[in-house]
Length: 209
Image 1 (cartoon, rainbow, N blue to C red):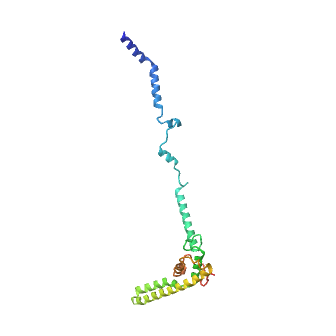
Image 2: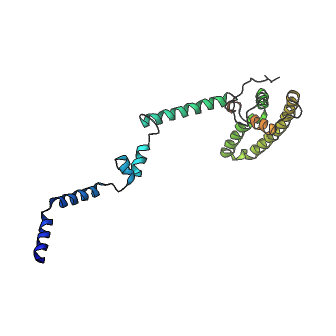
């Protein structure tokens, strides 16, 4: 009797389709549920960090990059040329701290208006050097010429600074002389006139008032 019941129970279980279908549905639902709760709310998988970074990246320049770089180089070249021309012409917008200011302009105009012996130093030094190389007998005379020229430059520089400081005191005040005025005037005086920067704005003997 007990054997018949076990056999009938097992046969009934094997023949019951509802239990099999419910188990299949339950298994399907378990596998369909997303592992991440955030994905269940958005109904889409969460993007990876690399994908987000690639999506947030934007090009730095629009259009053709080569054209943009060429345009930037042309703009930089134009600004450099404009600054160079401004410095040569003595434009205050482009001058550095060494050359900027009304007093520095006055010093340049005064130095450019007079003849300085220092202007002859570089040409005479080159001639003496070449003569000493090709004419050994002229070497001793060349040394005396160079030493004499240096002595004249020193005397002329002392005279320049004395006269210039008196003019600056009369125009700008006794206590308004900028630091380094003497050195600035001497260095400009020993340069060739055409090579001075900023270039001279006055003619010879056209002294500033």
